[in-house]
Length: 327
Image (cartoon, rainbow, N blue to C red):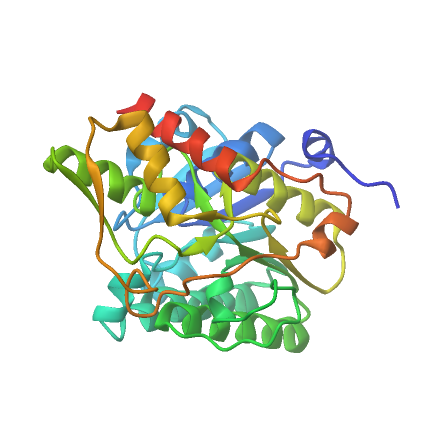
């Protein structure tokens, strides 16, 4: 099989396919919208703007092949109306509660914003005969493991966010088998870059603005995870969609290496600080439900022909620079 490179993917869009992107005004979603339009898709975006921002879609809204629908995916009747009005060829389902800490404080937040939104999308797909869905999941479904994570690592979520994503994965798998849908489930590593609405880099930069003496860092700084730049993750999603053609396609996406929270804090201070010292709050976890360590074994994605991305440290450094530039 000849693998399609990310730059070749747009060539296959010869009949103006329509992609529905949920959460399309968000961090990853807005970059995906831009890339799909560049590839020749007609794009319909749904966002309720809880975390998404209209300025992320500024370029997209100048494109005649882009439509923005502002409503909540929990409004099933409105969602059915959209599916009735549009001939949707594929759904890129990114909408979810992406703030793990917020989900810990409100026990129904992930149930509603991650699981029920997924169910509503699947039910509308079933009723309206839409057969393809790409879903962005998370390593939080796995919980803590000593070994690098692969696609068949046992799942033991330790946060409601991880549990809701795992439940959504299970429903997608069941709908795929029962109703003849093709699905791509992509478990993204920690994503960084311009347009981010939350996350460690933004948190640290905001703290620098309010404290001239110290930079507070949650945990003890040893938390260790892989980080990937947003443009690379979007290209990986489209690469998997173009080159993996099973009924059910499951991939972990991320670099093999990792970066520690301490390293990220030091880079933030180096690039944006004014001599502040680092003050760690202590403990191995940044917050309740946090998985302090994980790494990926992306051999399945590499076997598909995807080149290795920049390192975690390179991705973080690039993201800090882009976020500072955008302010």
